[in-house]
Length: 616
Image 1 (cartoon, helix red, strand yellow):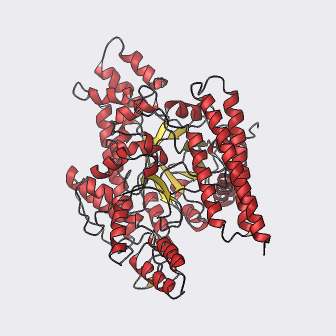
Image 2 (cartoon, helix red, strand yellow):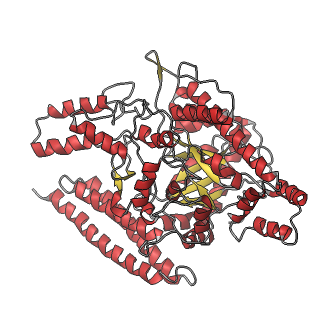
Image 3 (cartoon, helix red, strand yellow):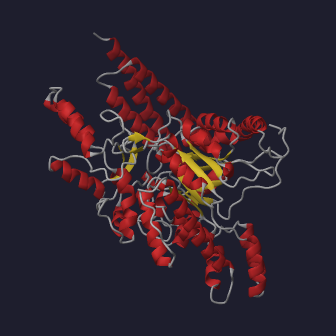
């Protein structure tokens, strides 16, 4: 498509072609402080303000900064805690970055580390090599470094649906005090110049709240201090949400495509749409997406009498979910024209980048495919990738054995179920499970049915606590309120990474300078995702076999049809590749053929559900 708008004369560039996504609640809670000075972008979760306040105190004590506690008795304490913590992380990260740029004979190791971790294709790296190949003039290098080096972005993540209503003396507070709203305000009031990653789908009320903060609007040159990033799993969702925000004068600077099921944490299964076809649609329709959304943006800004950028704004398309080799990394960048690739799960084994307690790291190192599973433990009711034998689940099992299932629910971040209380209650809490089991007992079910529904109730785990506890244990902080149990949410890719790594080693793996995967049987990321989707479909067929409905059968057939289209896309894609994946292409094509056969059997099972529907 030919643009009807002039282009801005700047592009959004990064030092690296990868980013570290948000992981859990605590695993990347202070990652920017560890990696941003090397030009690496990373994401902090804003779910747990209690954890955030504990870490702020720890860092203030450690760094000799003054600390004044923000207690839960203060007005707007959640937003204030988040603002204070983000400001601290920024100030200390910037300080480390300034020290790195202040090249001296003593600090030259850090500047060499910065450049050694850049890909060999980096023009910045080549310029530095040319500058230093004949001599090492510290003053000349320092001047150049100050002009050319950039710090990694300190981005934040808000799960839009984790927006619990809050109360004061049993009186419901206005919606701006909801958890996600307060987190948004905390970020908006910070000094950060970075990105807000919104995940878990559209929250219209939260999106509307964005309008109140000037930092999210572009200036006349198209610069946005706080950019909006949408984590999406299909093109249609991106278009709907992008237009919704544009009508409010807000621009989405990046669409972050994540595999529906081949990812860590919560998994948002698409209706059978696979990652490759989704990426291809974004590549083909990126310009149409940008222009159609920009037209709406201009109209909204004009109506608001706000500044309209002189030229059309740029957008990024990034991708993440199951990437594990440099060949896959480069293919996403080059074939699908992505701007960056997210590497999450493997970084759980890199203590220089993430914050994970030693016991959990050991479990992750030893994890194999069967230890990593898509569970139903999340109180949000969303499929959740988990690790068998994690200490939070062991803690949960002991409580069940004692006849006291459920968590004490000390933090209540997902206390949003209103079956029993108008103020909300968490489905993993002891209170909810006690009431639900009592309700179950009154139904006079068979022993088999009772056990089935009892296990469904007690399966829920206190993840909003468990996903943050690892950081407390890693730093030796008090866990009296939280307990010792750790929830961990690696993606299936963890099975193929079996040792702890230094930051430079992990990055060398990403850029193909070394290979840390010892196993020879790791499937291609697209094949792995296909297998997970086939397993997911099979489980849904099993669930619906006893009491199928016409609506469910149609959904399953649509799901299977979309998977079939995806397999066909991959067969054409890999058959026509000339240079990429030459060592594995034949095996990939054979695995696709096997996947098609499996899918055909599942389709026959789905069709048979129709017989059950019409039989007496």
